[in-house]
Length: 371
Image 1 (cartoon, rainbow, N blue to C red):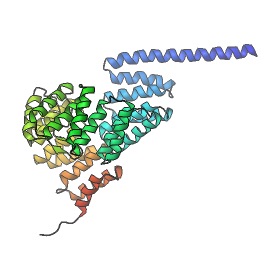
Image 2 (spheres, one colour; image 1 turned 90 degrees about the horizontal axis):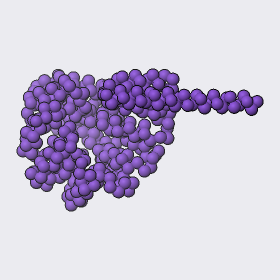
Image 3 (tube, rainbow, N blue to C red; image 1 turned 120 degrees about the horizontal axis):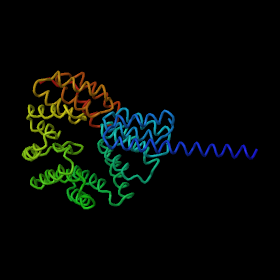
Image 4 (cartoon, rainbow, N blue to C red; image 1 turned 30 degrees about the vertical axis):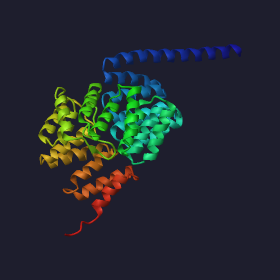
């Protein structure tokens, strides 16, 4: 009997060792192909392993990350779901899924997954910070500030949390606190493009355009594709056109920069915006800010059918992207009031507590008084 038990144990060890060897071999092939930029081939390497080992959560995680690299966002999110099904108490699947959903503007889903992340890992400072940003978008400023503070408690030099606290203070017109928090953020890490952007907003808003332009330029040197130069914050305050023109001239050295089109829209140079963005879309898969800007340019060039088709196509593919429903409603409320109402109603299905959407729908539903 003892001999039989020993044979079984040795066989089990042998199988485990072989499985480990098989995974190491697969990982080596995957890493090589991935770093060569052959993402679809990298997926095939992972799939060949998952056929035999469908319960390997880390391989599903690698698959999701790789799908993001070639813009298969829905496939990536489905794979992140698979990861959390296999390992419901591990934070990585929730957190990476939340980051992608946040990027796509799927804020309710991102909020839910950031919350799941901190349930699994109570010390995850980034999850608190990014959840705070979503709370701020929803107008829940107390919850937002609490999350920024918790992020700083977990990591005292969290530059992004200080930057978000600075932006929140700026929106609340507490300029001294705004400057203090933003300066502290830059002190902790001066390589954060978003902090440079926020400092640019601060100086633009406080009447110091030369400093604002310097920070915007620094932001672009760190991240040429950083968006958000035209308006800032929850209430979309505008940046002075003269400052945007100067920034646009600096960007013309980067013809594939999507900000060229975005800024052209806000400068009301719709023909230039159309030219820049259509050129960008020939080579890149845009996210909703670029799609929104191109649709806006088409609308003002009296190509309203093309503009509406762009919105409708994107909303059909991404019903969770509430900002696009809201922007569609604002743009087409005179041309298609019923469709605009429907867009806002869809946005409220996803974010029922969003007071901005509630107020916009109320205005559309209120009959105008006859003069």
